[in-house]
Image (tube, rainbow, N blue to C red; front, top):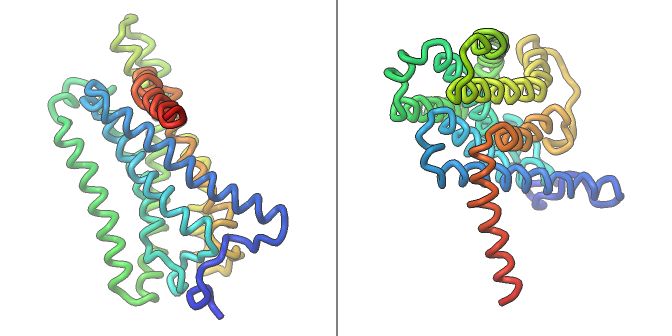
Length: 294
């Protein structure tokens, strides 16, 4: 009998100590993704100064998609689920879309920082907060239009869309992301270094270095699965298939990145860190203490 008829089971049978550890790790990973990204999101929403900067809107978008990834991982990673086209436990392409939205948000944030540093005057006139929100809204709508397209066509057509879309989209966007990283590093290292010391220069440099580090970690955790998907789908090769989503290391790495990204945001932005410690976590700790003593 299939999982759909028996009911979903854990990611691995809980018959050995290693399998139990894997099950607990999957739960911990999903919980960590949600807690860290919710914390960063609340910090941005509670601080008016952070909300007024475009780069924090992209951070908020990344956190929102990663929260959705964390929630969905309780299903896709904790349970015995195969998210393929013809699987009875598939998510109809929704769960991978949340991961893809994080990818688009970081790419958009890179482009935003590049234009903000290279052409600050033109950027301040062109990229208002409303236009930034419109860009974010546009790629969210685009992502779910792709989801609708995948679910309205046959499995064969959906596979062809994925293979071509993966080959063209992923390769070109990875090249763009690497190119922006190199360009941003040169700007942060040399162009901003020639400017006289000021608070604005330090703010620009820290924001550029932050998105650089975030993008490097992102590429490190995503390039392996990109390469695997391109090789298997486009070239029509038969690749090794893991038991389920939760035991596939290539699909696990982007989820680990969803934990690393908010940590990097907290570590790299002092204003965000201060708001998190003084208005989010401290408030939660006080409420917890009150509940314990009541």
